[in-house]
Length: 466
Image 1 (cartoon, one colour):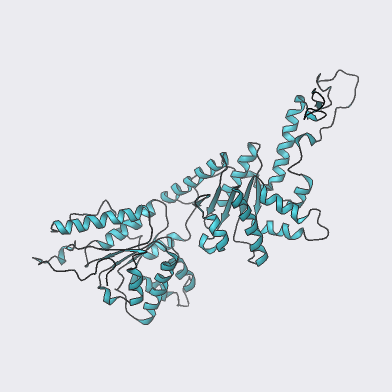
Image 2 (cartoon, rainbow, N blue to C red; image 1 turned 180 degrees about the vertical axis):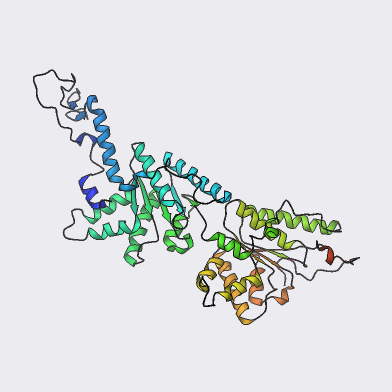
């Protein structure tokens, strides 16, 4: 690609269309081809003295095609797309690179959103996903679609943009820093590719913030791609990129979600069968009060799955449907194309311990970070783990992080509250974030059904009680 400074220096956006040089035809004895301009290529409007257009030169209609061609060439150069001109919506594989139907549907939704933005750029479009997921193709396709409509669009890879800005400080630079910086932050449509791959120097962070903050305040159309989760970006940038009043964030593809799903056990056929449709709210030999408890639990789980927010804690005796409902939430979110990680707590601790082995193919830090920052985490059977100091500390670190970040979390447990670490208990029962729901029903497991069940008071405290 050409340097942004060179392009800007050669082709000024604000030059009037009339300034485009169109060479007049050579004088010949033959009759001019255009009787209006006599092949000069331009005209002066016949207006009285004092009219705003008096004395102005305008292109002749005979040269309109040439003027439009030159205008499009200039827009293409200013776009800085270079070889990315080949990346269009027509050349895009519309279902993405995955063979998973769920991921294909998710990618198609992103394509539709990008096409709608290209038709009418408004607000910000933030494309998020791992490297190779198609973010740059979508972003370049938006730019190419705008150019095809004769509209300006500027495409810049973030590290390259910062290099161009640094280069303007050189005494030999042909463009001033202020001119280039002003052009980038005020152009009608700016596309920033690979945000987060730049060096994290204070200068780089400040320049990016100034560009994005100006465009945020001015509500200028902007497209941003990043292979980082938003929570990993600078807080000032994140607050603007994730502002729902201006920005639409599209997850192109999940980060290593398939590995996490298999690790957590959602690949098991039995758990995949646990759906809301397969849940029986009538229970097994349940009375009216117990059926009401099951129906309430089902409704609460379905509401949480539709819009995960805060924590949902399901408590009850073994076999009462807690795992089924928790897995149903995970399966529903996964079917909607949203990332979710389901894991049984003792298994989770075993996975973390296994990372200490010399032959482990994943580091402890990487695995722990993926789990604790998962967009939706489902922890099944809390309290079934061994109560070693290490296990208690890992669970506390995990849940405390999600508690402070207010990340959606589902927890199931069949132990009484006094058997749970006090630090965890205080967070699980915090009504500002967590909704605790007791399932008071007989076991669905036939081998656990007693011949007769006398009514007994629950050993689980109600929501907000300890």
